[in-house]
Image (cartoon, rainbow, N blue to C red; front, side, top):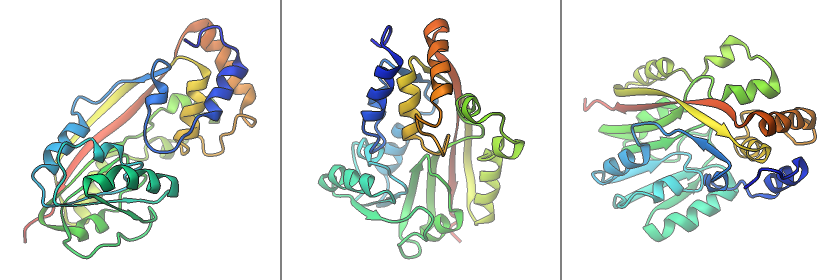
Amino acid sequence: MTRGRTFEELVKEAVDASVDGWDFSWFDGRATEERPSWGYARSMAERLAHASAALDIQTGGGEVLASAPALPPLTVATEGWPPNVARATALLHPRGAVVVASPEEAPLPFGDAAFDLVTSRHPVRTYWREIARVLRPGGTYFSQQVGPASAFEVVEYFLGPQPSGVRSARDPGRAEADAEAAGLEVTGLQEARLRMEFHDIGAVVHFLRKVIWMVPDFTVERYESRLRSLHERIESDGPFVAHSTRFLIEARKPRG
């Protein structure tokens, strides 16, 4: 329970908590986010079970990939942040998967047509031509991505109203067009808008420390006044409500 705890106590707890990996269990009882109806982890696992060579891009700490009951004989994951590389290696090596340290913006360090399945959950950016290059003919790219203006109630609380170009970034239609421009056929595209609730200011602080691109210059010291005001608002009015956006895209490389 966080009710009745001081601003200082809640913030200190959030600042002291580790933000390594892509595990959100710290938020249990403190924040909630509705999940998309399609169930990405389950759907990814179904595809992995039928693949012979799979690549998971920007795997984070490897938690989502490791949740699959069965992995293909050849399974590779890439990650660019050193603490996550170590976490993913410890989690995935016992499953027979190889973790490759690879910068997010660099070309994929694999030969052409190396994989029949490429997956990614919440990539920072999707390099469609690289994905098309490493896919075998008939292979599939399967990804859940952050959509436009996701959690912008949080973003705009701290940064103020954002330009229309910023709000419309990560548009699913743009992703579909970019996939097709890279030579892929989009076989599925779904969208969702999902309710988020932050039940205490510590949850907001931890969220902004973990998802660093939301408010890129975030520190408690820089935004202390806004944080204190939001703490008082949550204490008096209840949870701070925001909405995340997600889309699921699946694309196939033609056989020829």
